[in-house]
Length: 135
Image (cartoon, rainbow, N blue to C red):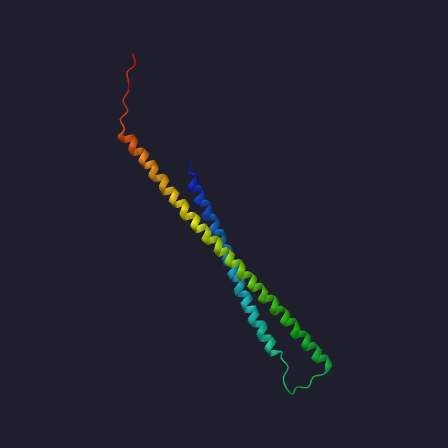
């Protein structure tokens, strides 16, 4: 079956939109995981805080401080990754909107082409071809 160029272009845009939607869904799931990880890290950071009146020796103090510092670094990395994912998701949403607008233009062209073909068919029906006799 022969397809018109606008129909093929429309199909291509549909495939691209589906691919972007799938990638957007994947990023959304990853962002949710990062949010849970951030919550867990914040909770661990709160639990590992120093209590007033607690007596610690230098090795315990050093170990706890090192652990808290490590948690803060991981929390910062997680936050930065969330920001990056948010930007990427916004880019994908922008691309999807751009594709929607392109599909609207393609659909408009398809309708115009169909109307033009219909007009040509009507003109051919209305126009009577007379054959000339050549002597």
